[in-house]
Length: 562
Image 1 (cartoon, rainbow, N blue to C red):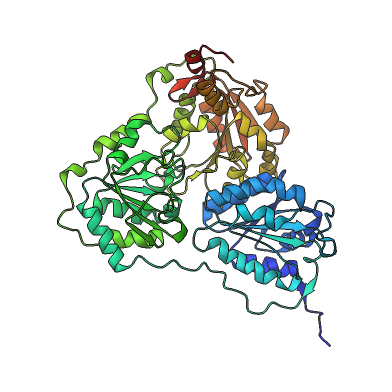
Image 2 (cartoon, one colour):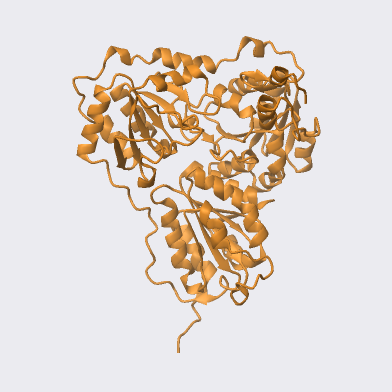
């Protein structure tokens, strides 16, 4: 007869697998369908269980945690409603290529398929927004599937993996698992010598070579710099990956974001060779799939073969790790064509630098409210330059993307999915992942009020983040689009100005209101010295809708009004 006295619960085995993979945090709203999993995490000495106010916040925290460290974090939610709430952050992880392990509690095994209480087909629900989604129906397979999930999430193009587990499985006692699948990510093949030589010769022979670096190159900053210098190639950062290359480097040409100024794009439009590294060439990065243009030959290096040539035609596509490939290219022997004098990128770098300076009219702005440029300039003058910046969706971000210089690696935590409500929970995840860093969330009032309740989580978790809210009383991005396309606005007003500083204090955080640059500078300095989280409610001018336009001017072009 089998002696089961030393058997442990399936949940305990799962948590051991997670800990062995280096996973240190799980973010969740606890639910009745995974009681034993939460309990096992709470009791484990290497896993921290963080209870949040909303599943969407939990997913954003896990995504930002993993984006900060490169190691997956866990997000856990209960069936139907919890899984639905969690989905926005999981979709963000997919679009941002962020590894994440997602546990979804499900109805008990005996009730599956009966439309039981809160039942949803979670595998079908999550399949389109994850790398892999599965439902486990045997408790003794949970540890094995968890190990497979870790490897899947981290191999190739990283991403989230979802495991749905009927509520009766986690508590079952199971025998020690047999040999588990390997936890380590499978290595990408190296850039072969022949491919290296072909790419090197191509870049050497080009007149105006340019590199577009994406999130896949975030861990390859040093070899990226060396490769750019080796070929004297200009470097663009893809959408919201501005920290991939030092912005003060003379070869930096700018950020391929929304509303990218034409002078910044000129060097890419004139390039005859474009090397794409660790970038999926998203709609935003390519300026609605317009660039790289037809005159440029394109080569692409990516850890995922699915990305090679998926958006732009390439003459060479190489599946390889970005760091290894860039290192090989940097060490290649220079060809006789290299170092041409027309590879002087100083005019292009200067064109980008001009877009980062506060315009004279913004510096002299007298209200009502602060000009967004004034807010970013004050942040630059007050905050440490290696601060980690998490940013939300919204038009305020256009000023942040232009005005904040990313000189240090892993200092930008931003959703390429454009998800609102991201910044505050993301800042919490980033701070818990790196407690020694200064972490600043930047949001509009729309995004801040979507997930601002997570300030209570920050207080409870001891995450001393700073939150800068651009409060202009509207959904600014939509107001801009409506004014530009329709000549009128609808459903964009938010009641205000609201006492967001009072809201923060009600949640146990510090709160301050800034209506002048001096007040903002003082609040930022005080927040840096605070032991707990601080929200700074910055009142901004609602008419300043983007770096290049005002709402009144856009409405005036149509003869319309709000």
